[in-house]
Length: 81
Image 1 (cartoon, rainbow, N blue to C red):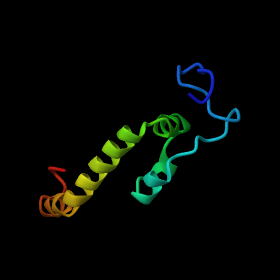
Image 2 (image 1 turned 60 degrees about the vertical axis):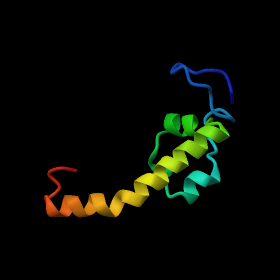
Image 3 (image 1 turned 90 degrees about the vertical axis):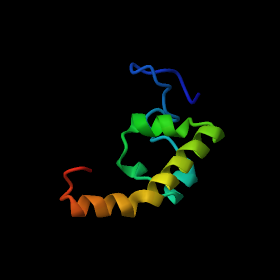
């Protein structure tokens, strides 16, 4: 935990309002973490090593099939995806 819960029930961020520090692995994996809300960033900053490993594994699996999904979207005009 990084601080007392706020009105949302989530722990407060360190330093009272500073954005939570995220693991470098999230940036390295290309996750769009800069587009997330502070609340979402807080959740990600509190992942255990095991949870982070699962998230990164899922991201790599999605990346592995992205060209196929993108091709289907182009063929079907994006109607299915």
